[in-house]
Image 1 (spheres, helix red, strand yellow):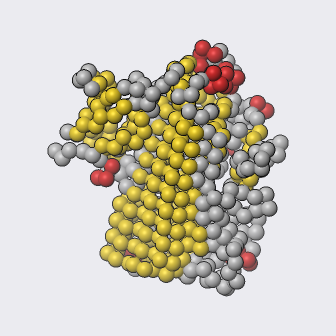
Image 2 (cartoon, helix red, strand yellow):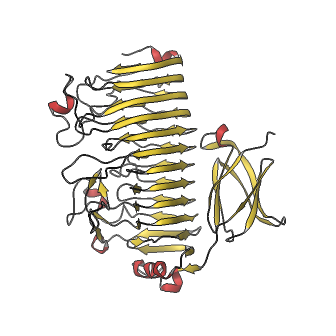
Image 3 (tube, rainbow, N blue to C red):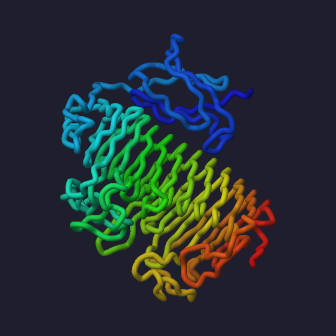
Length: 504
């Protein structure tokens, strides 16, 4: 047996997350791989077997050297230091309480720098809590932190700080929002970990009944909200049942999310999985996402009189992820006015999503999307595997002549630009509409598109349907690469199904 390659992704004080043979697999292996963690002296600490390429080991001790052994390979690592280990029960939290927010916040406030706050086994109802810098929130196995149902007990976060900095956004615009179950604002060095569950409470209360409206002048909350944070890690947890977007980092830098499971009801509105917005230096590894909207959506603000984040989203790595059932697996836009660049998606598995890689924008957005790479991945039963659309009919004027006109209009700061898209070593089975669709503006064609080693097969029972959300599009069935106002730099080693239309 060939020795496996091990990478330590995240080392917390009491857990560690690894990837094993990530280059040779997607999200999961065919067979289980046995592993064990030992103290350096040889005493066995933990053992198990994993089919997942990315997995987390819990119940470790802080500031201790350990050795992971698996597949003939050894990796030594040291857990993070810890100054204190506090338990929410010691601050008045109880599984019998109807709202533990005050007790949990009291424990957070008492936690010294580099301390860990433990949420032990049990179901703990809570309103929104606010983390602080240099802390670990540890959700134990068999623990569930669950949001309360009463909206009146949720504080409302303003759109901006007192100094006018943007605090939060709603679909790319600075707006007031209800606080999330877990909030981190202007924090550094925050670690969320464990094997437990964070339940956003979307099915409790009325959150899903007003998806595009406001209540008390505020938009719906996320489940985990990170604003202007740096060096944040999330690992091992299950986050589910979100009122709206599940994990929303905005204006953040240095975010690693590994071995996370995100699951929402398939009919829940706008419950995207993970939406980095105007953020940079992001690594998303070994995620399993199944939600009611997009699995991963990269955003960068929207032009609006209310203002929005004006930083680009850049340097994002998405690896070894399984994305299921959502509207799109990896989506860029439609809020992209500040620009999105240097996005690499590799060794991922898309299954049963409406679209695989999707880029969506429209006149009025402006912004540049550039250097998008999808490689070494598999798509199964994805209706439209690659979709790039410059006529996305979002917003009240989305079907107006200005947005939908196929005649060239003057180029301005409101004209979006898309270029440098590479798709290589990707296999698709069960596609329905087309191998790929590109709908560029006549005044701003999509440029520098490259496909290499792209193999597509179609679902035989597919019926013709419109492949993207735009006016004037024809339904497609079993089409090849469909392109309007798009310029290709390379088309190499494509399967016949990727090239030749077979429409009926």
